Length: 625
Image 1 (tube, rainbow, N blue to C red):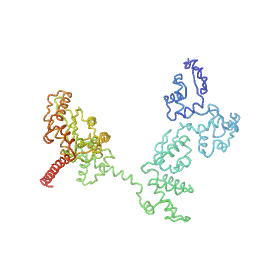
Image 2: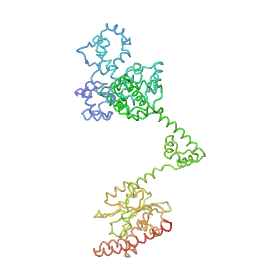
Image 3: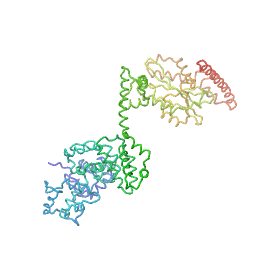
Image 4: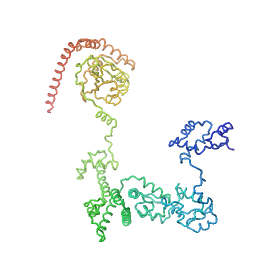
């Protein structure tokens, strides 16, 4: 018994809607116009959820519609746009709708119809004849040319023929006979042929693309393929692939030379018959054809030029078709022309065998440098690039040094995001807040290792500290939250080493948002950030972490030391003041007082740079540079 889908209340409600064509307890159907409107609204994203949303948008309550109805709409939409009923009459003013039964005996006497389950049905010969004339001739005109009275044949049969030709799904199960398979196997352009399958190779499509404007039967005949043994469904697929083909690199064709010469002759004659488009098409063909095709063309040009009835010289023909004279004579003279790829493949196989012999000398793995040296010792010299190419081609890898992806990422970041050293050790030649130093150090505790990130004001020495279990980007970004707010953004400078965290794009973008100019130490030079490194050294000497049993204990110790360092601990080289006191002292100076202080620090800086230069010169002399 059928399941009742719609109750009486729903039926009465939907009957009032003009967009619903029919509804009863089991079924609901929308009008053609509404289905077309719905199709256009959601195209091309056809799914049940989109259909539901569209129906609700158009004022139809989808909670009253069954899921099966929506699924049915979705399936039909994916096939095609809703169209009129199949029995719509197109030629009723000139054709009889029903066939004339008395005319069937004549149709059966022709090779185009045969007896079927429902009277008579078209043969494959009729379909092939109709397909070969499309689109130049209509189905009606083609039937008239075959001496068939279309008025007696009836509209229904003509309509059925048209629909089957358009859908291209009739006779798709037709098979090849053994004789046809043997005939197609001999063709070098056929990649695979079975009783139900026909596949052409890439060479066929590369060369057939030049003739894409021709009918598929003509294209197949150019390549010496009998088009009559291939049904129109396969022809449709082949033609579609030719029209949408993109040229690929492929090896020259090996096969029956006589057949290949015939194919090249057919192509040449077809190109010459293309009228005003001859030169353009021939040039396009020369650019796309393989080496064997070029050689065949050169032989044809030679025969054409030697013809006594020819009105053109060899040079004029070559100029006409855009081929160089030297290339033409070189191709004629070189017997191995077109075999370059095959010879190179053969040589590569020989060379890789020599490489494998060297690799298998003992059990130890070898890289390309080792292979190069061992081959050279055996008088089998190969370049490094050739060894690398062959090893890559034949999938031979050396696992001694694996490719490190993280190291490559770090190297790319260093190349792209490394900043110039703008501070140049002038730690005290600035006012408080103008230069901020940073670094990350590790702390060894009884329960494990924790990481300390520090911010230090270069002039006053004020520090801000942050502890984390992990040395990652989050630690560096959290450190930026402790940066002081400075009104004059042009004087802000943020200095660090070239650590991977400070090279990160996210970190640098965040720093730009805060208005800081980034500066970095030279690679491997701790003196460029010596003020920050000095703080870590003093802190680790003064704080005892051996009594810390968890990270909370470490955080408490660090907070206590941060307060002690900023407010209680005086520093000898900062006028015996604490960092907070020294910052207040500098900020309260008059312009004359600050200039005097600045000149004093500048003199100390110049002496330091002079001593560093002398040390570098003496070190260079000692190592013999």
